[in-house]
Image 1 (cartoon, rainbow, N blue to C red):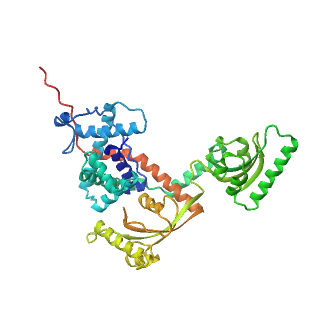
Image 2: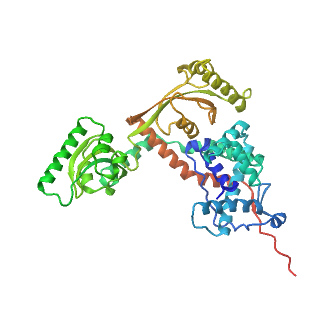
Image 3: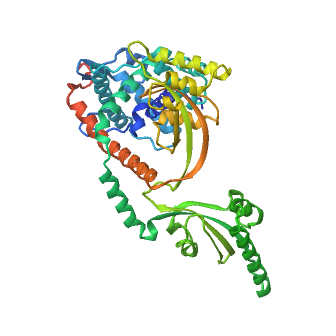
Length: 461
């Protein structure tokens, strides 16, 4: 089924959620007021002509037609996801409350001077197109086919970006996580980790199958083979390659990996065999009804703790901060020129960074050092993840300014105590934002004048 602009609108909101405000882990959840009356839903052009106001937020109206358009989008999205459809009246009630909340936030953003340049809207539009596997031109064609003007679509983007920046600004002070909070969380997780059922473990195996009808001599021969496999693995051979070569288990094609899961979802004999191992250690052979298993412990951690190993990336960038003299669009044009010169071999990245970048990395040629997942804001990390080593991105707009990014290299790395603490801090910060968002949104709404209006009554004969 062809995706309509209503479904694309959801992709817009998803994209915006990954832009600056969600750099702090914001979620676009809503706190729906149970007292709010259901908003009627219009379904035809004739009803649109007879449209009416269902709510006034300060001096701005919300019409029944506007609510109905959003209701259709939500119902279409739920249908595409094969989810049970709620009553349209209930969806309308929730949609109206969300629209009121968004409008109060948009008004506050405008009143407090938040602005979004065309260059930022361009970037959001490109991100929407990319998420839907369209070019921007194809996105425009799809919008036109659904009767939506590009200017209207871009204005929706601009408004959502303004709301996003407001949330980022106002929510930031509520999301700070102290060292004491990190310490308390780590202590709680360590206590939980003493109970094996609270651990997450990841095991890889090499299976030497023992047939049910095997006699004692055959079993002994297969035990010898399993010990031979164990010796090869412990001598330093690549476990994944060895699994693909000799394992009789279906997971051999996945390097013998059984997945990261809670300990109670593994066979007890596997858990018992690896419980005293350090990550990377190998043990066996372990006998089961299927045969002899050589096991390698790939990972072990508490459910609430970050992974012990991550893929790190080393990048460098040039950052231009917009000002009264340099708009975001001008900064993007300047960085596009830098990118052209770099790709043509006319200059080098470090020199341009030292001469132009407006942050602390300039002296190091823009080098940002090794970074773990979550260390950069999501829009920066999203672009970085798509690059190959040596590749230079197109200009990216973030809450810090406009960046030109080059990925230098990637590596698998074990996290030290400091890095793990920072990942824990990021987890706690995201939870704080989730917990406080609804409160903040209600505070903004409470400061606005909101009038709910009943639908007009039909004339009585």
